[in-house]
View 1 (cartoon, rainbow, N blue to C red):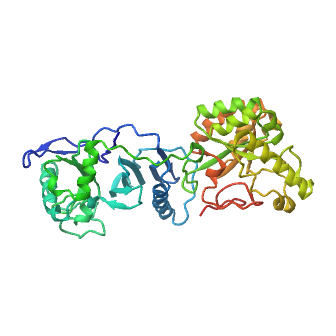
View 2 (view 1 turned 90 degrees about the vertical axis):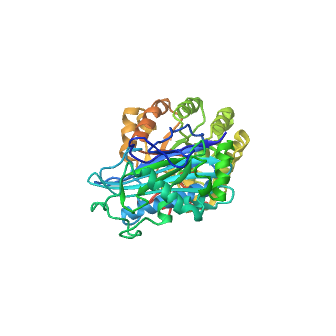
View 3 (view 1 turned 135 degrees about the vertical axis):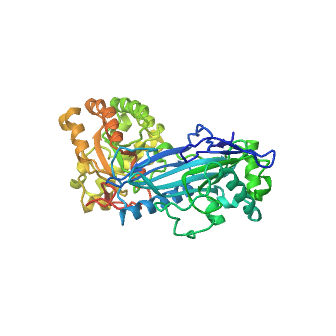
Length: 484
């Protein structure tokens, strides 16, 4: 089935019909209703603190790493510019869809997906004291099979842009008669102070409705270049605009009308889904010492809350509970090495260290089919000998819950919440019933504070972790590793 979503990023005005050349129909400000998105589209949101914050909501496509990385780069560029340097994620409750009274609001939506082509609408709005001082609407089209990106103007025949300009001007005329520029909203620096907006500036947000009508969002009067009081989306009948569409536009419109299904890329496993922890506040839940019966209870809680975590398992317990270890891997969580018998590795010889790690590796692989990529030295006890002998990156932590000590969620939950920061790794133990009892509440508190809960490979995505090196958090805080 074809997935077609059109979001009119404008304040609704009176809907009206303008009589163009029959059988044309032009509807101003009519926004088609939002439809359900496939699970391969992942919704994200974040914001910064301060009196003039930046808020962003966007959508990733599972498995489309080139597309997702380009989107990350664009968003980070905006956040870095707003920060006057490197953007540091903030753990703040998100406000999706909220237009700020002061600050910058960014929205990105998938507006079309058919065949291998994805259309994205990107809107950036700047507000000062409740007044819109700048707005940028842009729809681009990317062929996921080649990575080629085409702007909205590519859907229009260059020889017919003057015709389209006339149609747009005539259509919005009754609603927005030509008027002198508004001093509070001067033309953008790239536009002339007087006269009509350029073709490139006019055709930045062109899309198709599910029925193949041409939908164009404009922020300036196409006749005069004057900023409109509000953005306007104009939907034009497909038959009336057939001549103004380019060959690429005709191909895309035919696919939309014909219901060509979206050829989604193979999705990334949920526990490895694309999340940029340089852009949003991440925290990694990690659990030591299992698996046992409490692990099974924990898996049910994590599934209910759609959270993926990292389990550092002991080889001896894996041998005793292979079905539980297998269930952890099957659920999409990351399984890592916590040695065979939980000794102080710093007190062992190189050969004994290697045996402890290898024994756990073999036991985990036999039970789950997974070869762990990380090791956590018991008690966090490591030294140069351990680093030279383990053969895997050492994953430590920067938030120690001390859950084993209190075995009381009213004690260890406040401790976690007082210590966690963007990029943290949280240490807990899934062998204690009290720890498992507190996980639903912990997850709710972390999400409520604005954290995305990720696995260790998600937290350190894009960072080359070296065998033997120790990692306890991501970011620029002391002891952490910066992602960029």
